[in-house]
Length: 120
Image 1 (cartoon, rainbow, N blue to C red):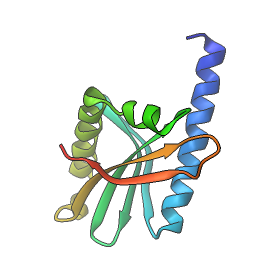
Image 2 (image 1 turned 90 degrees about the vertical axis):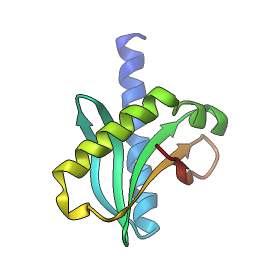
Image 3 (image 1 turned 30 degrees about the horizontal axis):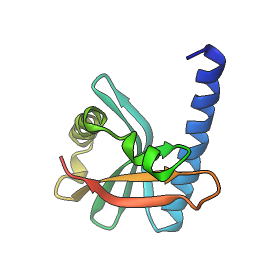
């Protein structure tokens, strides 16, 4: 991938994450973190609503299928490891219900929030 394409993809991804965070807020979630990175993985958005903590992966693709397929087995593992690290730094969240969600951003369609998209 060229540097220019990489920059455009990065910009598109950040825009999709901003849109997803706004949607979550409208649904009553509180955003705890965005772009949480550790050596073992990354989480796009960590959000809370009530006693539920959602670790959210945002995918902007040309189709819903492409967006969901982009969250493969290895990426899920990296997200789970990053979530474990996040929880180790936030002891006050112990005992909350944990969930792994996906928000698919597809041109010409409303963003789709898939709650509990997978379980580790």
